[in-house]
Length: 206
Length: 206
DNA sequence: TCCAAAACAGGATGATCATCCTGTTTATAA
DNA sequence: TTATAAACAGGATGATCATCCTGTTTTGGA
Image (tube, rainbow over all chains, first blue to last red; front, side, top):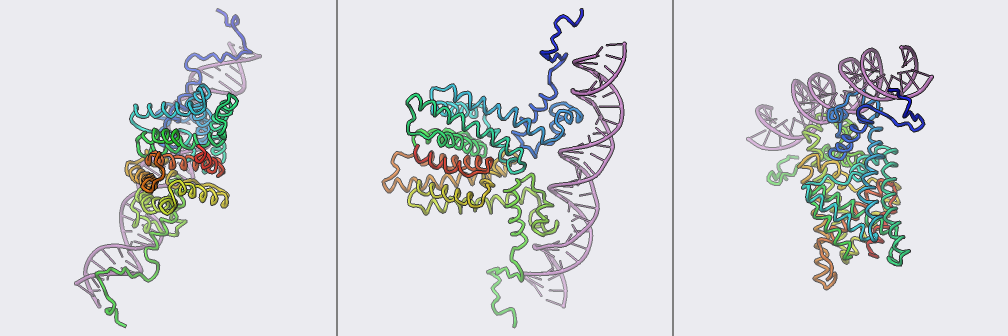
């Protein structure tokens, strides 16, 4: 059977026999998890290689330096986690406040179910890497900014619908993100998600 | 002049010719600063020795392990910083809300003046060390707890004076600490203290 | 079929790090 | 004074780490 029948080079079908982008993806999976659980400095490339089952050559091929790996984790995984956990649910919610409430609720419920708290991926890496390197800091600051902007935009949408007239979008967004980040910090340190519910309740009754 | 005149062995006057506890104090000074600016893992004992001007033997004498040094920094310095920055001002304020407002204001002003943000010492170490070691976690969780309790107690005092009748002390304290911690996280990542003022304003108008 | 580049394998390397060890000095108590 | 322990000095040590280097295999296009 000739191969020229379905050939569409322009589409770049990226045909691969085994696992497309498998090596790179597996390294990112392991790195994301280890950076979250142990942090950047405490995660050695040797550990990551062993956990991912890849050789030093393979790791170095996809990520020339540890910093490059971390930047990839931030850009491709941490940003996606914030998008999935926060931005999409808030945009889909009936209102900004209801969206924020629902995310707090969902995260608290999940943490209580799994029994331990690893913290917010963005916040964890931000603390360890923001002052260490300008590239890290810029990447992390961009995610924080997009997160806040999504909430502020939702408030603005609410206002166009006649609600939240007395609310400042930027300030509300800052408060929501700060409260969540801080509550996750305490929950991680106490290994107890109760403080998340306390903060949610206080936000409502304030 | 004989030395037996003012001799009071029971009092343990701890007479020292030069600097009493100087070595240990200098190491703690340097370690506190380096842990804050670079983090625990990124601070090598060699760097600390050089910065403090102490030998390896001296460092090892006062702090047998790096972990012991970090625990001393947490117990003696981080706890004191929270006490000085938050607990004392809140207790001395006219009310809990006024105390929280004043601390936010003071910290924001100081950050804007010094031009850069290194973050909250407690929060910084909590993120890096909470999951790394149970002893670290316990020490840091205790400081968070005392911090919240001081604010909650102030709310209770306000309530005994007839104010804040509709406020839950624990929830308010959790919200205040979470908002501050999260705002400092963002301020550190953005290297901009504006978000602190945004959060303070949102707390007031919420 | 053939060739060039990408994708890997696996060990080498030099630097760094925390800890430990052997002395030497200093302070305290008897 | 003298004995004893604490307080230091400074280098040794073994482990660990990120990076690099030399090959080998695989892939995709001509």
